Length: 222
Image 1 (tube, rainbow, N blue to C red):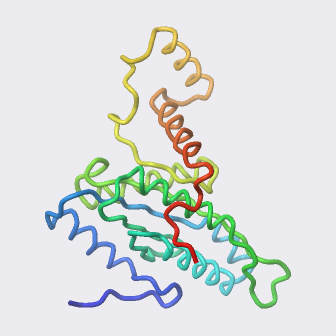
Image 2: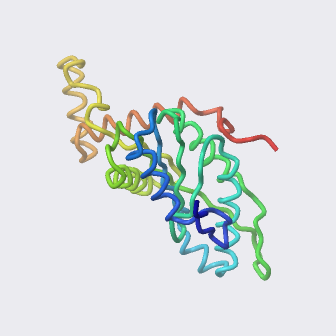
């Protein structure tokens, strides 16, 4: 079997490995579930501008090393400052907890230094995740959903983990009273967003509150 090409900076497998991994899991008839996360370094261009390419490489290595601490996961250099993480056999909510722990751990990295720089480098990441088969039935759809979730994380202020959503994940309006529906409509109007989007953001907030205090879940101890 041909070994995957390895990225010289991070030591992780390159994008081709992701294509093969997803193809094997989705079209190979494997049972269970698979969760894909796309991870992007926030404001990486500014890091390169302020610390040079050596600084950028230092950040890439630090993130890759931290990702390697994730249990039951395969980390891949997707391209540029973007990484992919595949959890095989892990439910979406479990993967969310581990990715939230990863995000928090990265934000706590201190003391990254580059020769000639007068201050250390710190950075954060944004993450979008989607699960097969609930979020996408094929490789292209799964990647699109994870990328859309990553985009929402960026728009939401960065340094976040966001889930992909299907309409069936949004609470049905039949479960709300008339008064609750009126309040929902008013809130959506005030924020100039759709009611479904507002409900989805509420679900994100609930998950983030749930993992507060469990930031190290899913990371191996040294």
